[in-house]
Image (cartoon, rainbow, N blue to C red; front, side):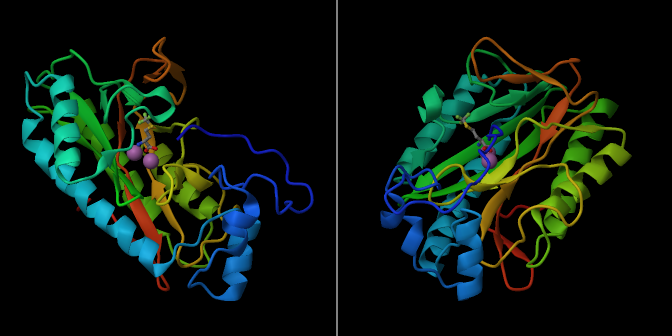
Length: 299
Ligand code: MF3
Ligand code: CO
Ligand code: CO
């Protein structure tokens, strides 16, 4: 998601104010009294940070949506070959999702015109499927978000089209491992800053750069919830992780510099220097001892 700069919090939220979680409901009808399975101190803590701690029922719903997202990526994978048009990937994802009585979350989301994001080579994210045919040597990220029974799960992978050259292999390997490094520090007591720090130190250590403008995000009841999860940062800073939080980690890693440009379509984000960019994303649940991926695939 795009980084949203928050207003500095002042005082307490009025019961009749719009809920800060972005639901559009009044605070008192939404997060103020939300029942959760978390211990009371965690619930208080999460409310303070405007984060929904998910109930067991919500977690099972997101897990089911996550299974569908992974099945969708598995369905698409064999089509990532030279000559496949990105619009065909969109149709495959759309029809598969609808056939499972689910809804593709991107379609009409803030005006996004298609059902999946397909981002090739120097495209960092939010590529709009269309007439472009995949070519031998391309790298292509497919980012799937499905809504099943009202619950959202969000995951992406970057695929090789045919045989990658050394640069393509490098950026895909570094971005995959960047997600792994972030996931490895997800456990209660660690912070959002620990995740960003783990990713940034690894990726920059490999001579790559971390995109700043887009971040991971809470997910599950809505597409984009609190907290934001930057893929850079300092250890020990930011929100403390507690069981029941569900958020994505989705580092966008560039082979060259970190700067980006958004094209005139208002969506497609590309590297300013034209260098390759890659991304992997999973939806994670914080558990008592660490995490469970709700969109699991091997890294
Ligand atoms: N799936 C993207 C994410 O990881 C968001 C895509 S928004 C869209 O947050 F509108 F482009 F689909
Ligand atoms: Co996401
Ligand atoms: Co996504």
